[in-house]
Image 1 (cartoon, helix red, strand yellow):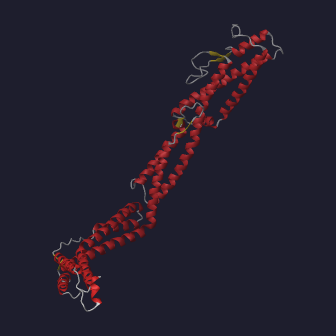
Image 2 (tube, rainbow, N blue to C red; image 1 turned 90 degrees about the horizontal axis):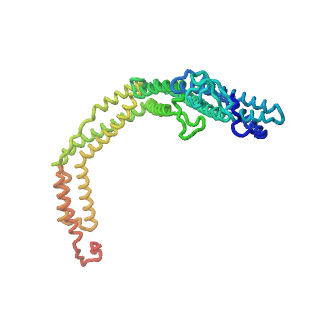
Image 3 (cartoon, rainbow, N blue to C red; image 1 turned 90 degrees about the vertical axis):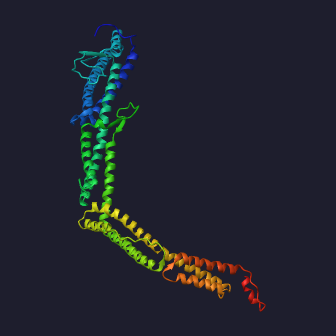
Length: 441
C-alpha cells in the first residue's frame, strides 16, 4: 500500500468509533446472510443435482459468485480486524493512528487477490483477469450485496420451482395411473379409443415435464415484472395446468363410459320399447291407410314406409357390445341410437297423423252437422221439411263409403246456411197462446 495520505480529511476519534460500529454491524449482518445462504435448502439441492440448460449455466455463475462472496467477506473481516487493532492501541489514538485508520476505513485499502468485478457473468478467483483488485470497505459492501442478491435470487427461484412443481406433478401422475387402470377396465386403450390416446400422451408429457423441472427448474420460472427482490416471481405451471385439464376431460369421458356400464341394460330396454312403439305406430298407420282408401273417395293418402332395418341392426350391435363388455364402443352407439329412436317414433306418429287426416276431417264434419241439428231442435225447427231434406243429404254423404269429403263438406255448409237463414228470420206468433213466442228468444 503506497504512502499517498488519507482520502480526504483525517477522521477524529468519534468518527472512527462510529465508523467501526457501523462496519461491525454490517459485518454481522453480512455474515448472517452468507451463513443462511450456505444452509439454504435450495443451494444444497443445486449442489447435488445433475443440472441442465439455463439452470446449469446460472448455477455455475452463482457458485463462482458465492465463492467470491466469501473471499470478499474474508478480506472485509481482515480489514475490520486491522482497524480495530489500530484503534485499540491507545485509548486516545495518535494522529498517526487516525491517519492510518482514515486510509483503512475510507480509502481503497482492501485488496482481493485475482478477483473479477462483481458484475462479471462468471466471477472467479483464478481467472485470467487482474492479479488483484483494491476496494474501499463501502465499495466492498456494495459488491457483496450485489453478488448476494443475484445468488440468492437464483437459489430461491430454483427452490420455489422444486417445491411447487414436482410434488404436484407426482400427484397428477398418481391420478393419471388410477385413471389409466379405470380406463383399461372399460376397454379404453391406446389405439382403440381417443381417450386412451390422450392418456398415453399425457403420461409422456408429465414424464418429460418432471425430468425437465428437476434438471432445469429455472426454465419453469417466471420473474416478476419490475421486482428487484430476490426470488421475485412464480413457477410457470402452464404445461402442468394444460395436462391437468386434459386429464380432467378424459376422466369425465371415462365416467360417462362407466355410467353406460351401470345403466346399459336399462337403456337398451328403453330403446327396444321406443322402437317397438314406432313399429306399432307405423303398423297402425298402414292399417289406417287401408281404411281411409276404403272409406274416403278422391283423397291423396300418403304411403306409409316400413321400419328401418338399420336401427334394429344397430340395436343388435349394441347388445353385442354389452355382452362383451365393450363399453367404450357401446357409449357413443347408445347415444346415437337414442336420438335416432326418438326421431323414428316422431316420424311414425307424424305418418299416422298424415294418413288419418281425412278421417279426422270426416269426423269434424259429422260433429258440425250434429251440432247444428241440435241447435235447430232447441229453436223448434227440427220438423222443418227443408232442413230435414238438407240434413239427410249431408248425412248420407258423410255416412256412406266411400265418402267424398269435398262434396260432403259442401252439403254440410248448405245445411248450415239453411239453418242460419231460418234462425235469423222473424217468427210470426200463433194466436193460440203465449208459449208460441219461445222462438223470439
